[in-house]
Image (tube, rainbow, N blue to C red; front, side, top):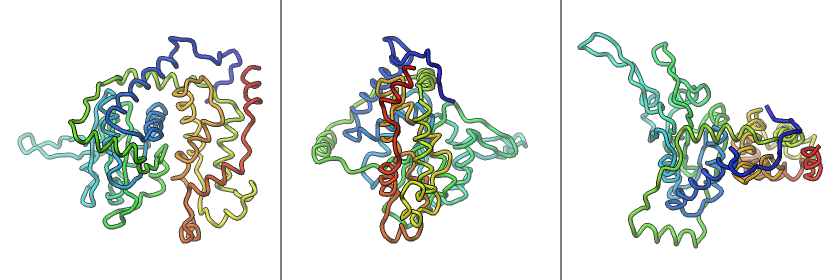
Length: 345
């Protein structure tokens, strides 16, 4: 639900909840950058996902510090951290837990799996078979696990940060669309610049930097609550919905040639996640309201994995990002001066 109270102030006075959240997260970001060189966009989006309580899928070739980034983020934040290396022989019990028979007592005891933590790193998630994916699906969506007819809630907050390698097909299992849709963002991690790579090589010559824990779980909950106070104009919500709708009915937005390239457009989780993520990004950027640029900056990360491309698109080498670039160019955005007058009214 968005805030339309005209009496709500647009600026954040010093010491306000949003200012405190931004300062604390900037300090956490500084600690992470003591270990991770470059990748500023990825780090910003990871913090956005934390504030929006959304799961993240990191995709990139090996050696781009995806796993190290997630582990460092967990070190800086409070809470428990679990890492599961996904392999083809993994079974659901390895992930969520199982019932174990105790001969000495003659009873079955429940052993909870590694998903019962605040931050779960699912490393190379696309190497696990479908039965493991289905087990992870419940806990990602429902925040709970059912074992032997008993339901166990996972700790709050619970966030899955998954990595996958896009260049291998041997021994991998494509994630089902239903599970991909549960990820708030799919972040594509690219190679560092030559200067950043030189800094990475230089840092490898000495012991890794020790990072300090900057936040507790209570802090993270408080900052998440502060994100919910960021204002979202009706026209901005309409713009996010229009971006998703253009992937379903491109002809109505002057993109008729795209109809044969998209099998299925973004689900309603797309604009919901886009607006929630834009609120978190606005907070990180020091604003108490969302602007159109926040939505545009996050559109590809929130929507790219929700598009199911047709065979024609795949055969022609068309990517989801190519199509989203065209959508962003075709859908008319609300004018900022109009939004400013609406907030001031």
